[in-house]
Image 1 (tube, rainbow, N blue to C red):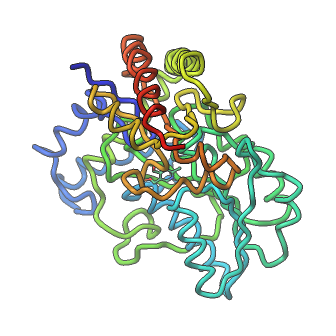
Image 2: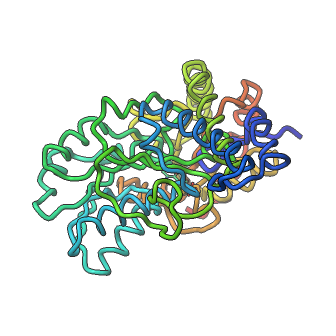
Image 3: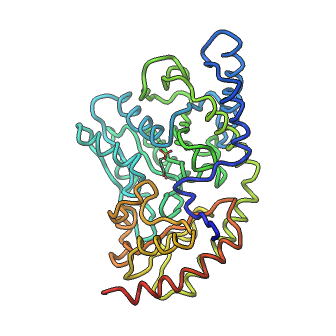
Length: 382
Ligand code: PLP
């Protein structure tokens, strides 16, 4: 049976080049980078190199990159760190379609005395920029809006958003976990103060992330203890994975143009094929401003989980709902916020591709999806 992995927004295959880059740091170069001796010194220069590789992917200065354990930690640090540095329970602005790594922290801080605005989105998954402008007040410490949505792939106009936020004198954070490495980003051109990244979305292992913090941004650390990462993130560095993350960023930068063409062609053929072959389907989210690798399709009157299980029988992996909560039957908060009809929210499936997908993978999905949908519609009580 063919294995067709189209759940790359949940996690990605570790690139062979990344595995090779990591290997020496598990076998020979195991020193602690904070140590004064050669074991430590040897390793430290590789962390510096990885920091440069990560920085270069987003146009940052290496001194503005702090390594963390994952995207969730970076998101937590940005929001909590800015709120704590501001002091006295300030106001936070975010959107209703953020990943739980942002949304849950914002709601937690609200429960502890901060005020919170969650901006709504329209049917395409877009926020209203006038509403954003109106939501910011003199007490707003941070605005956190994702760059690209993990479920729909919808890309937010972060350049315009950041300009509004900076004009209002607030800190601008963006969860860029899904867009980094997939589309060009340059923090020199976009006035964001903080940006979250995650390794396992771009062919590095799980358990490594980073946060970009623009020089001069007031943000308190989340983890305190040792002086690692210039006192901004305590804890002995995960050297092998930092090196792997650096390598993954360099690969992503080198292959980006080719990869965008490759995955968008596959995605478009997959999308067109499903729309043609299946009755009562619709693409969720703004198709014009979307990650090249993602398509989210609503199948009316059938359960997304049933489609997933039947696809799985043919070796095909996709997702329903949020990547990190798949397995839960809670309907997607993103699709509900967009006003997707209830009958389609439950039947929405996300296919997310990577550089490793092929034309044969798309053929395989297009061969199996229509009969699965047909069978489920026949079984549907609706
Ligand atoms: N933000 C977004 C948009 C995500 O898609 C994810 C993971 O799916 C995260 C944050 C969390 O990243 P991590 O799994 O590295 O904690």
